[in-house]
Amino acid sequence: MAELDKKEQQRLQELEAYAVLDTPPEASFDRLTKLVARICQVPIALVSLVDADRQWFKSSVGLGVCETDRDISFCTNAIQSTELFVVPDAHADSRFANNPLVTGEPHVRFYAGIPLISPNGYALGTLCAIDHVPRTLTKLQIEALKTLAEQVMVQLEVRHQLGEAETDIQPDYEV
Image (cartoon, rainbow, N blue to C red; front, side, top):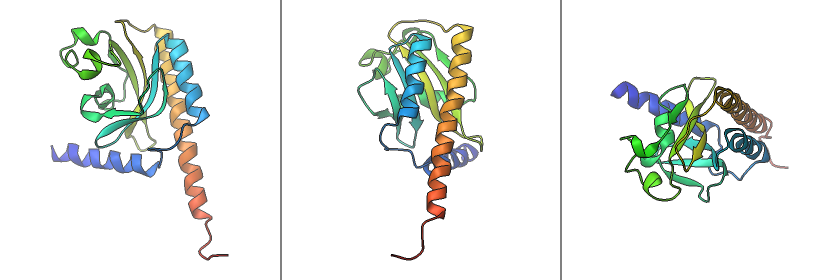
């Protein structure tokens, strides 16, 4: 258990280093979630980042909130692996059947999330597709979701590198 706790602390430090939590919406991320919604034919698509207590949405289509509690999030389960995490029917899955996100708004029935893996190997969150009805994804939709998740990480890396560059060029004196 101590090893898991240590890895979780390192994951959280990595997420914090990206300095993306609680930042305003950005078109580059919004375009990707719109593509997910269209390609997967779902009403909800998210770029979700999982911190210590919540999952926060850097981008969302079809959801009117900017975060939910981590302890009820599907994404918390998804970041435990580097593979696609799918719940075809949340009502039929004992892990989620009584989850407030299933029994109430937004009435999740289907969830598919691809972990957003940093270059250091930490799952920072997910790119996910959510529907109000049970379903599966086609092979083509799965491939597209994986490719778009890679593009989310490219955008996060660009943001991160630009932030580091700005820090490096700040003068040590006042003008």
